[in-house]
Image (tube, rainbow, N blue to C red; front, side):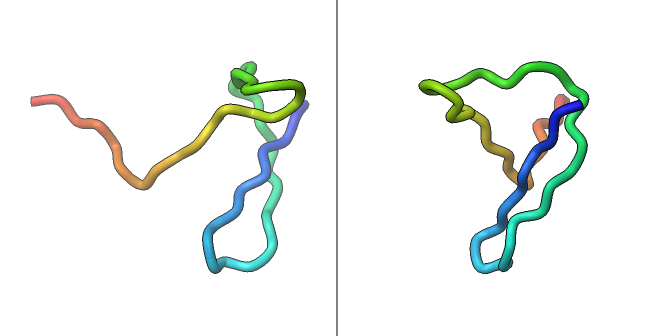
Length: 44
């Protein structure tokens, strides 16, 4: 199983958690092209 490392600006050290949701696209080499936001899309 792979892990995801999460950092929050001003939040101190990064935290690692298990990642079992499949592959993440890479920008180049081993550099992931992923980000998250606190917003969730909702339909009408």
